[in-house]
Amino acid sequence: MNQTVAIDRNALLLTAANRDLTFDSARAFLETAALTLSISQAAKTPWGQSAALTIAACAIKMFRGGVYVVGDTDTPAIVGHRAQTTLRQLLAEIGCSMLEPPAVAYDIHVGGQPPVSNEHQLYCWADGWLAVVSPRTPPPQLLEGNELSGALSGALAVSEAFRAWILRDAKAGKRTQRLSPLTPRNPTPDGIRLDRLPSHIWLLGLGNLGQATLWALALLPYKETASVHILLQDSDTSGAENLGIQILTDHDWIGQKKARAAAKWAEARGFPTTITERRFTDTTRRGPLEPALLLVGVDDLPTRRLAAHLKADFHLVIDAGLGATAPEVFDIRIHAFPGARKPEAAWPDSDPSSEPKLTPALSSLVKEHRLDMCGAMTIAGTPVGIPTTAVAAATIQLAQACRALATGTYCDYVDLSLRDTSQLTAYDAILEQPESIPSVPSLQRR
Image (spheres, rainbow, N blue to C red):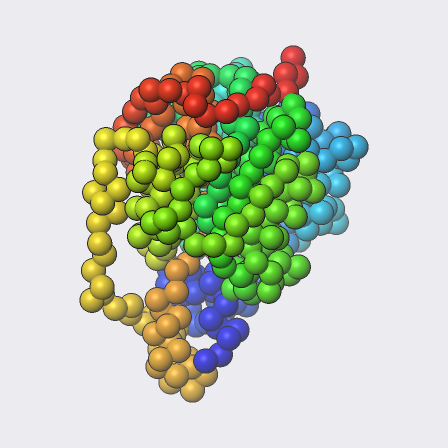
């Protein structure tokens, strides 16, 4: 099997969306797709910096032609827990270029910007808890956003740009999209303040979703990261196929256990960590000093059911699932426990008889003897993914944890697609003992 085919999941996604493309033409197009990022006075706000950094981290994976920063970003960094650095330096570390952008690129503006002539552009902003992306400029009066609504607005913006510029979705980028990670069913800007944040978190799974959760967690305004403990659980090793879809994975991660690489990344930001490389099984139990909040980001149904059963002694479990096929790649489903559904009802058995189908691009590779049929079928069944969907799901996970701490309520079910955030389903639940989730005060900037 030709490994360059197998590991290029973005090309697989593009050829699935556009059946007229060959694998080679898809890769060539991806290599030229560029994005420019500009930011207004929002660069001095936590939500604006969270949006800009999230745009950069996602787009560097999805726009291989480069991410170009225009305008002044020399303001001090106030998110990300990196002392004595600037927003510009953080963007450069992610891989953004400060050089003149190419003549043809898609533009994303964080906050209000002077109108420009490029027809391929989007604005994103946070209005309190509401994340917004639109082809039009934001209104002059907005509520103060926060790190989670900012990160979500950035993820929404790159998702729309990717659909419009790369997937050529005629509906993308043409309308205003709104989503609250705190109250998805009720898209209003009002909500709780991030006054208290979870201090003990168990992350199960450190693939696309788990890395996105760790990314969003590191944006939160912890007063002292040393007072936070993160337990990282994953038995897998990072591979080259993860580079294009997992937000934290870089070349240094390849060949390393994901839990160890993630721990190194978190500890560089001041978070104490514990790692476990064992699988989560029916004998896994939370110890009395281990985190009672479990955030799940795995795609294995038996593991998800086991984690959701409260016999494992977690007090709150928030599971996020992402679509794994090209038509579902923008889909998110959240389940939380305790909730109205049993784990078996949340994740019924899938049909084992279903067989993946070859796209025309994969069929051509078989005809050209660049793949054998077995390899082509294996690739056709490979899950696809993009970091923007994972980050959007992660902001909802973390917002529900913060909401449970503040009010004792949370969403125990959310079902949505980033293709159209107005069409979603969400239900609320009550946590009887929110004090059972340890928390710490947040950094108060006012």
